[in-house]
Image 1 (cartoon, rainbow, N blue to C red):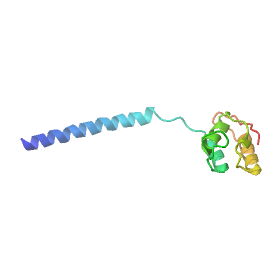
Image 2: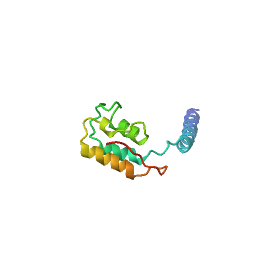
Image 3: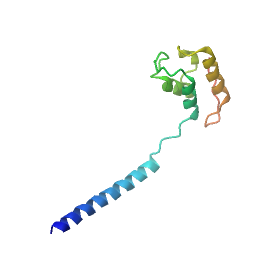
Image 4: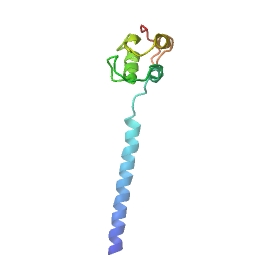
Length: 108
C-alpha cells in the first residue's frame, strides 16, 4: 500500500510538471515581446550613462527610448552630455533607419 501511494504521488507530480511545461511553452510562443528598436540600445550607449534624470526621463535608456520614439526631439535635454556626443546621436538617428524604414531628425 505504501508503494502505491508513492507511485500515485510521483505520477501526479509528473503530470503537473508536464502540463506546466506545455503552458510555459505556449506562453513563450504567443506572449513574445515585440522586437525592440536596436537604435534605442545604440543611443543609450552614446549617452553618458549617469541615469541622473536631468533630461526629465527616468534614466538614459528612457531618454534614448523617447528620442527614438519621437517623444523628445532635442538631445541637449541631456545636460551632462558633451556637444560632440549630442552631434553623434543626432547624426546617427538621421542616418540610421528603424524597423519601419524611417529616420529621425532631432536637434543636437
